[in-house]
Image (cartoon, rainbow, N blue to C red; front, side, top):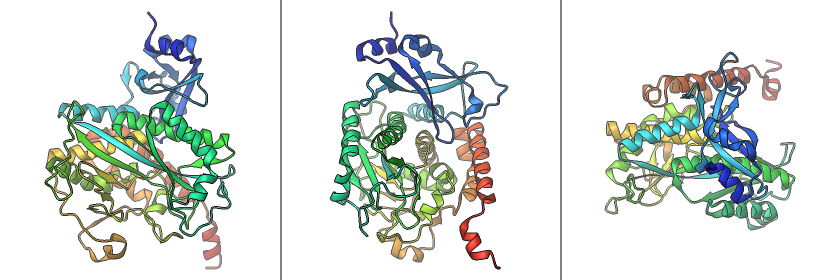
Length: 435
């Protein structure tokens, strides 16, 4: 009997499979496997030297086996002979604890035991820039307020159409693409789904946009703040908890002011309580904090949070409740690891449910204009170093995600911070050469 993937190869005309995993820093790693060899690898996995990726593995360790998930199979519309697969990492027959997809599945299993099923949707913002990374791909995109600019959007129609057509063919159910608030910035929205499927599709979406951008002579970047005077790229997530069947939204309460149930408020309270500890995961680069701390941009607004607050349909807060039965977490940026992002949200939310955390009352104010008058709000970390210290001290995140994952993530990120700290910038030369 052929395996699931052997049958898929025959039925769909797939000649090669990309068995892929995301390491702890969000790098996508793959091996290309001819269809003739996929059967044994479906069972046993493709072998990787784990030390070559950002994982807690030494060169003395044996192979890291990436076992593909047949349910994640995506046939590339622009290369239909290729099938992409998300994989889980194992070593010596045991899951690799510092593997992001494994960490998310662990939290989903924890939620399932409580009778919960998390569904999420993500809003992926990115810039289209020149291939050398030094300028925008569209030199005519110069409006002071470029958000929703139809002319700028349609100048990228060949790329946009191929991206949207591909997503329709793959079953992502995209429903809108727009030019975002910065020159050269775009956002694509597709239907929400179970958190693991959303994370897999998020990983693939970032890969797809980069490959299609290159095909059209451009470069797609998810860098949080590639231009100092323009709005940064976020990765907002819409979150809801459903029953095990996925048919009943447990966050919805039509009688409540914001349409949220007591469970939703506890979950929201958990996210707010753990936000400072999770900032390193949600905003994982040195550059991330230039988005959070950004001065007013050329368009007049940063659209990034500065404090840990929530409100109704109000984009000046970290958490927005646009309608009943869900809320939008606006902190994460384009550099966030798709799996760790989802795992962190769920771990924090479940902590809120278990500890019955109260998020307090919503603040129905413009935080950009009036936020300085609110004394009781918690501030976000000011840089990656502070965020890493907060993550390292978090008992909640260590219990949920595991010491191995937390310590591995911090070790790599502290090395990144040290490298950045040793770097001499032009600002320093311009301002302190004659001090």
